[in-house]
Length: 104
Image 1: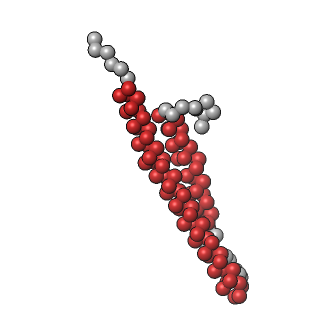
Image 2: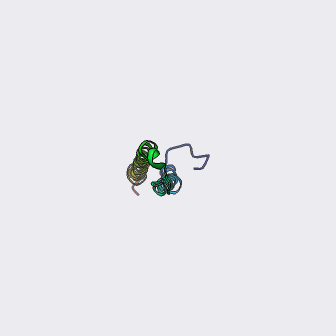
């Protein structure tokens, strides 16, 4: 965002939406992809005994991280395309309604 953005305006809200869309959401997409690529460990893996202990913990942790990354991405996408989009539209409408019009 621009360092001189100090006031709430439709442009400032748009900048926040753009940061979410262009910077933050792709990070969670990348994290999810990395987690998906690490679902299984190649042979010999954790070994016979390790698979029961470490393998189970690893799978549980990976599932939790994937679920949390998906949830975080979903929240950010909801903000960007939902709440902030409507806030931006409503702010524009409020500014338009606040303009004093003089009849000729």
